[in-house]
Length: 180
View 1 (tube, rainbow, N blue to C red):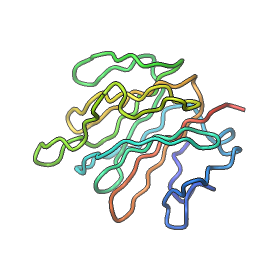
View 2 (tube, helix red, strand yellow):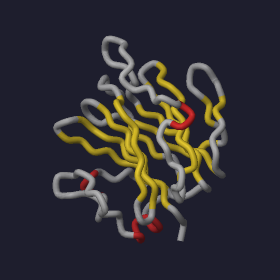
View 3 (cartoon, rainbow, N blue to C red):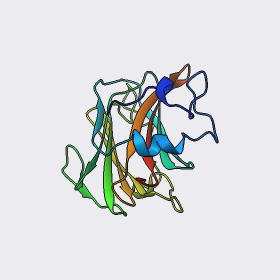
View 4 (cartoon, rainbow, N blue to C red):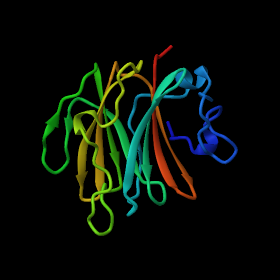
């Protein structure tokens, strides 16, 4: 499945491509067009990631990675183990399945100054009470790539897309609540 662009996300984006709060994608989109195979887009960017946030919607839980500059390349995939690049450290997460998110952007700026470092890497963003997400773990940044490990309830369909505006870009990962 090809990753949709902001224009291809029916029901969840406004005319400018920005996400509209409270306007979830139709349930049919979650169950008929999403999949559980890896999603990837090539390309490195110099603009660092600056924040990670999450949200709950009618048929999915969402993670948003904020970045300075243009949208990065990425790889999002279910994995058997969350192995950190470079060190080989294996990270545990809560949940019945694991998703590894690799963002082709560093967590530091051109001067080497860290611009993203969660207070608690094991709980990079709070997801307690979410229907699908169980844990989001910051795994670090290595040679221009940054990684998150996501524990989910089960291996469920997901979609990945990017949004860009005048202030930067966002990598969005939505994980459905159910297969239906």
